Length: 325
Image (cartoon, rainbow, N blue to C red; front, side):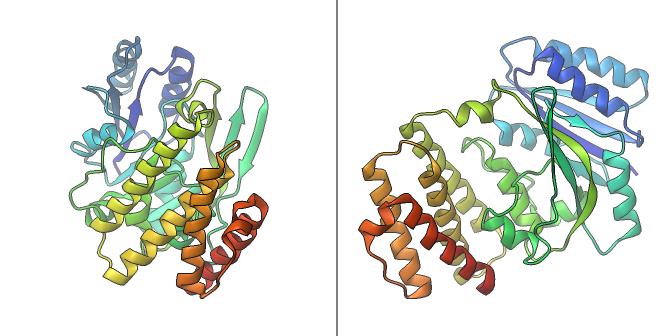
């Protein structure tokens, strides 16, 4: 069973890239098709990718290095999606590490359980070289993965997941993600369509190591100023809305899911430190609107500007959505 790996790469250091490439070569399952997509790197990443391609060739593992101008993770994935032919597909990050059974365990599960199209494993967070923490990924079992993801009560990552390729093509017929949006929304654009009204299986062991680095794009993003953060969350909202518009949803569903998506973005904004009173007030206005729309609950705006009260009332709304959608 051929398994395709689509791996976007942008300015990945030698040490980080070496760890991921070695972990691919050490996979128990060797019937692989690896796409290393260089997203316009400005350092020696492309050269290193071509060197690793030789290693894959020596082990008779299909590997293609694709080169494109810098356009972001979504555009890099789009390029890989044009060429992959595996029965299964996954999307690891270039600076993480795969357990040797990462692919084989999930392939075996899907082969033995044909009623599932998606399987997800636990993963381990590695912060530095010694700090490890395993993340248990089965906290979506009660409400379903789509609903739990939509309400941001589960990690919105696609890399600890294996998907049947024919199912991916049915759910995203054009195999194209919206480009130029917010960093990391490529995962939402993949996850929302494929998990809608679908059972997601869960393997109860860690097969993926997510590495946190101080110089990574995601960590730098956490330290941006307020204007940059507001711009980021606005793009994130637009990407999620664009994804819903492509899905086979009723008008009522689209309105509901867009409201929930925007509500969760507003919750994210309120979690940032040192946001201005003007921004807090805008967030409070939106929460008050959503509370009244869905729960017929009128809350004093000035109360919602206080962060603790904001999260108290937004939790009420989250619980409502969990029980009703």
